[in-house]
Image (tube, rainbow, N blue to C red; front, side):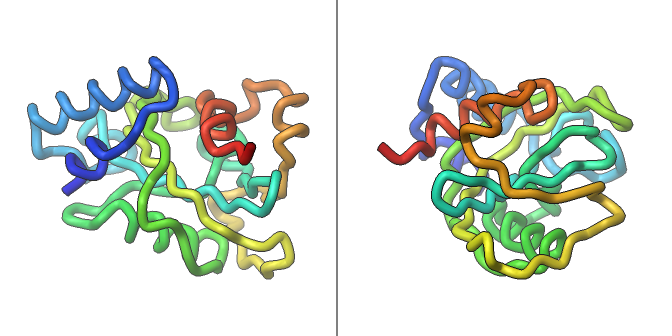
Length: 175
């Protein structure tokens, strides 16, 4: 099932096209795509990011382990649809329901932080969430949470964020 989902993506740039092609080749080579043992067994596994969005702003979490501002999300459980993972993670981590049923972006990233070194193949799902929505934040996983405007992210040090966040924002920009 992840193969069809990934094959249906329309890459926005050459890097995403390479990530999609590499991921499709990976999926053809193995069925061991789900993390079974924390942090890195197998060393490459499937992740769903869910990006809460309200107008020109996105909600990011200060992830304790990665030591970066990231979208909420988590590892896809064996046999779980990545869209179900996105919705589950949004509810578990922020107490909010709802996420897009279809991802709009794919990245392949070697992780950083406390559990650095494995590879996350991440599907990015947008979620319409109001800035006024009350949140129940997973404080064990996150040191903070805040709404960032696109301009604030563009003005900040890119090393503070997922290395592909700017590309996601460009792809999802409303003209």
